[in-house]
Structures are given as C-alpha cells and as structure tokens.
Image 1 (cartoon, one colour):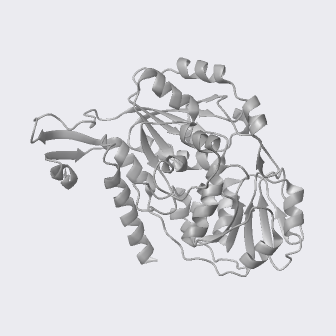
Image 2 (cartoon, helix red, strand yellow):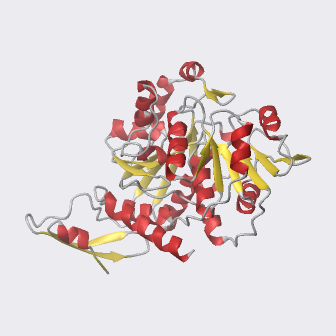
Image 3 (cartoon, helix red, strand yellow):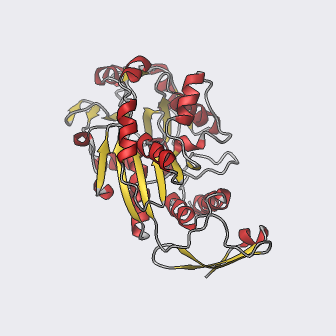
Length: 394
C-alpha cells in the first residue's frame, strides 16, 4: 500500500494498491467535497494511442523504451509512426501492432535546415484525413512523441493528451536559442499536447524528467574505455565532408555512422552502416562522441561519462538550444561548422564523469498510470533524486 503525502498536503487522503498494471484507486476522501480526486482513473488499465515521430532515431529510441514499459504494466498500446517510409524504419518490433502515416518531416541539406523544401512537402489535407480516420474507439489517453497526427487526433476528438520527449521541456524555463518567431512557434506547436513529460540533461529547477536511457546501457557490463576511439554520428552531413574533416587526426580512431551504406575501413576512419547493437557497443567503448545536437545520443553519452562535441543543425532552434545547454552545463563543446581547430581542442580534453541517469521511463509510466497529471513535479523530483543517488554510488 502507498500513502500519498502530497495528496494529504492538498487536503485529501488517497490510498492505492499496486496491482500488476496500475495504481488502482481504492479510496479517495476530499476534505471539502468527499469526491474522488480529479484526474485519477479508477480503471485497472488504459487503452493508449501512442504517436512516434519517425524522422529521427532518437524519437524511436526513447519511445521504444516507454512503449515497452507501458505494455509490461498491462496497458493496451496502439502505435502510430509518421514522418518516414515504413521500409526505412529499423528495430520497431516492440511497437507492433503499429500503423505508419505520412505525417510531416524536415528537409535538410549539408547540415542546414531547408525551410522552403520543408514547406513544399507539407500535406495538411493528408494530415487532417489521417487524424480524422484513426480509430480512437475506447482510447483513454493519447501520448505523442512530437508526432503531429496523434496530436491532432486528440484535439479533434477531445481526448486527453500527453507530450513525451525533449521538445516538451521547452515550455518550461530552460536554455533556448534566440531563433526566429517562426522557429519558436514551430517548436512549441508542431505537435501540442495538454500535459508535458519533457526531458533534459539537467532539471534546471523545472518539472522535467531526466533523459530516457536504453535498458541495454543499464544492464550491459561496460567495457574498458579506449582513449583513442571516437564515435561520430553526423547524419545531416555528407560522408565526404566528414571524411575530409577527420582525415588529419591520425592519432585517433573514428567510428563513423550516419549516411553510410556499408561497413568499410580507411586507415583510422571506420565507416559503419546502421546497427543499433554495434552502435551501442562503440558508444560504450569510445572516450568521446562527435554528433549533431539532437537529444537522445548526447543523453546516452553523458549517462556513460563520454565527452561531447556537438554540431547543431543550422536553423534548427532545438539543436541550437541543445548546444547552448551543453556548453552552459559544462558537459561539452559545440561548433557551428566542421571546424578542425575546435576538434583539436576537444580531443585534448579529458572524459567526463558518468551521470548515471535514473530509469526515467519507470517514473513516467507511474505518472501516466496514476492519472495525477497535474502533479508532475512529484514524479520529476523523484526521478532526479534517484539520479543523485545513482551518481553518488558511482
């Protein structure tokens, strides 16, 4: 049994019993009204419509962990993926049964956002049609990882929605690049939701969760770190540009992922095609990571204590904000071009200390199951306290 002190401070006593699925409400006594606490579901499990933005592997990676946890807890989860063709998706078995829709995607060229091409490929008619035709019969909750079809479906059909992911930290007071009004509006309104489960590398004294770390990085024995080995993941850059950038630094061994179609070695440069298992192995073995300023990979690297060099995608306010936060936190460096001088300075730095983030999806799943979606800080504070305990053990 669990006695909820937070509920008591708000003038009510709540008693829960943890069963194999959820926190099922047994009694709830409000001092003023005698009615059940608002927002707490009294059903055992929920039917959840879960939207995944397919354009980036980071969205798929963190959604994979939360969907797995929700299914383990007994919830019925229906998954929608949009933004990428189905044949281009990898390692999404945990989402089954799932459906793939067109959605929206961002167009880039040589490390820069191409807003003109992005606008030309937008198909609002298709978006509306998909949102209206999704089967939401019996759905209790919509969760969207920056996925616009499910976000719109929730609004059109009056279903409560939760935004899950790094983008949902930006409504709070965290480091944010200046950007244009259009960029800020897009970031905050691309896939809006009623409640926010935002993620970041630090809490910034805001009700946001730590990063979602793949279960593999908790369970696997960490191999000895190779001080010469550097992991490079720059999917928005052309391979020939990356090769020219890294070629002069022969004292290090670079393992390069991104727009690589097949494995090949060229001296100290090792090019690797997509392999989640191989990528995580190289991540654990390397001493540092050079990557675009997305969110998931830097979070995984910081969890393991790798030094970071970020190259934000030009014109993408989220990535520019991430680079700003990385520098402000003292966790790494950034560069706005493939700058050899910056790389040379960064290679001379020592590795960092592992941050050992807590199992974030456990806290998010508990928050979702509780139905106490307005009591966000109770759950975010608990996640960061657990993080501090794990960090002190290390």
